[in-house]
Amino acid sequence: MQSTNHHPFTEGLLTWYHQHARELPWRQTRDPYAIWLSEVVLQQTRVAQGLPYYLKLLEVFPTIESLAHADESVLFRHWQGLGYYSRARNLHKTAKLVVSEYQGQFPSTYEALIQLPGVGPYTAAAIASFAFGEAKPVVDGNVFRILARYFGIETDILHSSARKEFTDVALELIPKDQPAEFNQAIMDFGSLQCSPAPLCASCPLSLTCIAFQQKRIQDFPVKQKKAKQRNRYFNYFILEQGNKMLVRERKGKDIWSGLWEFYLLESSQEEELESLVELDKILPKFLHDAVIQPLKSPKIHLLSHQKIHCKAWHVQVPDNLDISHVEDFQWIGPEDFEKLGKSVLLLNLITDNLHLEIFNDSMPR
DNA sequence: AATCCGGGGCA
DNA sequence: TGCCCAGGATT
Image (cartoon, rainbow, N blue to C red; front, side, top):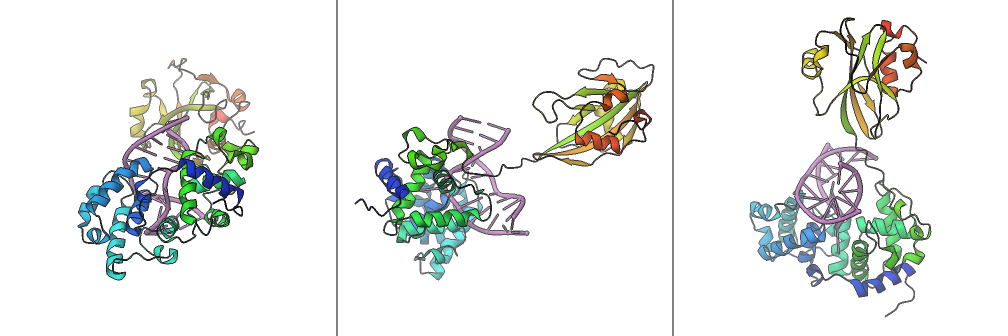
């Protein structure tokens, strides 16, 4: 029972699995059709969400022939709400292909399986191991996470080379005589124990886990932060009156907190201000009589996580117009403003418009 | 190598 | 809100 030539990871994993295995319907069979169906349903889908779909689909399409001969619209109706609908189209394609080209018998090797529409490295390994006992390790989100933590692998799991590297590691761990057991085990382990928020306190592998040893659980798996690249639309107005301009210090948790800037109106929606005509809709009423001229400005300012679309205008406020109290803003002379911290975007905006008298050739640096 | 495809659970 | 889920196809 206890093969002592297993890697300690594998030994601990299988022992854990014997006590914690989930009872899932697709584990009660070795029918490649049912297994394939379950794996496609579960692609990027939680077990709890996919389970009822799997049961219903297997009830409506009990055999691959019934699926192959079904109207695709019927399949889509049953896939409704599950998402990633190309899965359903590829499912139907593969069903017809297996019936017509393989006499209804699923191909039995990883290399043949991965040729099927909608069957990639993960699904091919899953079918090959679960239905045919081939020693191919499944490498899904769970496996990336578990191996990265246990072995302290620093490779970015989103990098193109990551799959091969993790597959190679898993290949050294998977027992050739029970690959299905190992693959089922590692996914249950990822779901129940080494989950995104792991239960290290009760984990039988924690003492040999690099991430746990180094107290760096939060560091693994390494995954490049998704550059949100939120689009924002900044409309700056250089309000000038009596050789002073209206500025404020940015505060709070937004970008550039602590830096200073001109009067800013941010278009909240994805509506850029295209013309002066639209300005009237957004500008405070007290500015309707001011002389407004468009300025040259950086069109786009890129941050790591934001893409700022910028437009700017110069506003000559008449001397007799009192706009002394605009919330958060204050009037300041160019000499004083020069001493305050500003974003690169604002510096570029200034540099682009040094011809303005208010800057008086005194602004840069 | 980068993007797109989705709905849902959870901190 | 952002992250993640039994990933794969497309460009």
